[in-house]
Length: 381
Ligand SMILES: *Cc1c(COP(=O)(O)O)cnc(C)c1O
Image (cartoon, rainbow, N blue to C red; front, side, top):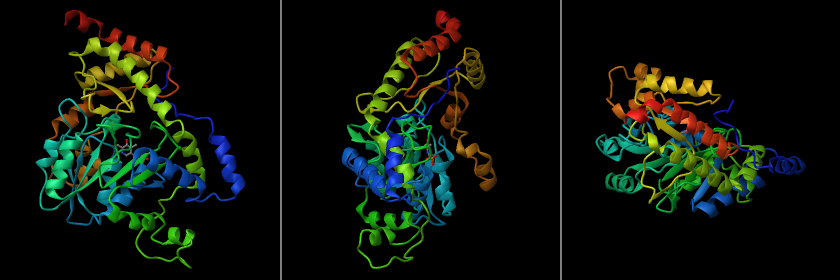
């Protein structure tokens, strides 16, 4: 069976974990937390980074940092994971869902612009599959309306828009190191703070609302409760594991893009029957976080997934569009937004296996099986 996902192992994880054990400090904000944060700041130009226990945690920190409160509206795509929405619902905001584009699961900037009101406090965008949203139009929009921009960059480590790293555009950005992502610490995440006004407070929120970080640096004689906050800081065990992975990040991206390119090249004859990822490669350097195809309907997707499974290939699909979810329908019974593109991707998008240890010949085999499934359609096209 070709599995849908296998987490990446860099090789040095155990060595670094041994260092953590020998140092006798397991809790967070030690040597490896600093190493990871320094690596990410110096290689990607992020102004300030904070490792967290998950991307969900990073987004919760973002919602607190922006003082999101009842009465605020936040606009986000419907076609995304629940963690893009939950942190803002937890603060009492109303979530307003925007639609995807017709040929890209990323949120459409036009759809966002039509939803902005006096109450709009922030926009959260998701770089789906590590493919950048239209950052030029987005930056213009949020500047014009003076609203905060948060990038849910969970899938977007080492991906770029016009040579600028994703995660360096928004006031805030959140990354994930969950084991379904390109590099991982099992569970893990990072908040990027690009707005200098938000940096000092982020450090306090992460340390349960205390000024412990300043105390640890020797700036204070004691530490105490100074703000709200929570336990968002990951342990040194997590950070050490992640540091091993960060050192291999470039080769991970390279291998994944190679596999992605094999899929794209071999499946290209299917364009017109199915839809393949489509974005301006001139501006966008993606990180091959996901390879997907969009089938013609939900039934066809089910049949294709079954056909591949019978050939020993595991696939996956995802995101019940949030505006059609059980929670949203219960929480907002009167609101029934029409988001046809989000629903289309929910019904028809299928993800193929893509991970570092997948071989090029496995990717070719999978592509051949997909072509085989569609052979009658290609002949009659
Ligand atoms: C994976 C993912 C998350 C959640 O990441 P965690 O680290 O598991 O909290 C959030 N948003 C998107 C778009 C994701 O893909």
